[in-house]
Structures are given as structure tokens and as C-alpha cells.
Image (cartoon, rainbow, N blue to C red; front, top):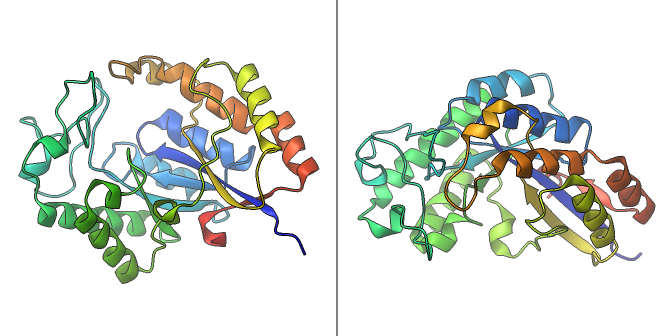
Length: 263
């Protein structure tokens, strides 16, 4: 029997704001998403736990976080971690320096792997307390923390083994499906591009990652230089993931939608 096309659609950044919580839930219930990644240091985690507590069908991942990238909204470690924060106690905006971006990065300082390990442990413990059915970890703002530092990758793998969580296979080369470009932030264009790209998927397992959110004035407060149109980006993402045309094409092609649990 020929190998099927399997697609893992992952909705990131639940916990970061209420619009993201609602968007991630809607993308799973009404759309094609099958896994939701929750950022444990963020202010809206309790709301995410409330929304998802009666949805055991939704696969939850603990989205390990070391950065606070928005200019107007900040979050900070769950632990005492002076090497990981700015002078206000918030996570730094970047993991690594970027050309044309002068904001501070973690790689530009003397960060402590012991502090990161303690912080990741706290995020996992808090995550399993609020989401006892969580199946896996994923990594915020990086494919995997092994790409940032090999020793940190070992820390994450060890914690996953200890807590019985799947260490994200995205780090090991799970192919990423990119069905539409970043621009334009237009749902009609994204749906057309998504439908066309589905036909090009080769047999095997692929992962699609994006950040759905419901439309809300809250989103207008998110952003940083180079990414000022967060609202348009995330709302059109949700509209694409819940598009009947996208779902019809997935069904027509016989693509199997899976979650991390299925891996």
C-alpha cells in the first residue's frame, strides 16, 4: 500500500493573549489544526486552561519560551533567572542577533544553562499541572533549542524523557509545509495558495506551523519593528485554517490530519 500524506497542523502561541487562545481553539474545532502550543510564562495561560479543559480531543504542547519579543506586552521567567532577563526582569526580545535588528538577544549575553534548565523544568511542571493531558514540547521562536545550543538540546531531551513528553521531531527534520508566503496578509490569497500547495505534498508526514487568532483590538497592541501587522497576519491565518475550501481539498486528496499524539 502506498504511503499516505499526513499533515500535522500546529497552532502556536496560546497563552500569549486571549485572542490567540480563542483562535487556537477555533482552528482545532472548526478548522484543520490538530495541536496547540501553550506558552507557560504568559499572562493568559489560565484562560487557555479554562478554554481547553473540556476539550481532551485537542492535543496540547508545552511551548518552551525564553524570549519576550513584543514591544508593548512582556513576560518573564517563572523562576529566578538573572542571566535570562533585561533590567526590568523580562525575557529578552531575541534568542540570536538578527541583521538590522538592534534589540538585545540571549546569545549576546552570558546566559546560564543551569538557569535555562530550571526554567524549562518549571514551565513543564506548570504546563502539566494546568494541562495534564499535554503530549509534547515545542520551542518558541526557534525550530528547537538544540539549534540554539547543543547542550540545551540535551537538557530538553532529558526533561522530555523524565516527564514522559514527546521531544518535538521537528528538530530531527520533520518536513515543514509552507503553503503561503508571509505577504500579502490576505485570507483569500492565502486560501488559494494553501489549496494549490496541498497538491504538491509528497507521501509521508509534514508539519505546518502558524499563529491563528480571532480578530480583536487586543492584537493591535502586539508587534515589534518589522512585524507591525500582527493583527492582519494572525486573523488571516485563522481564516485560512477554517476555510471550507482548504478542508475540501484535504478531503479530496485523502490527506490525513494528525496531531503530535499520532507521532
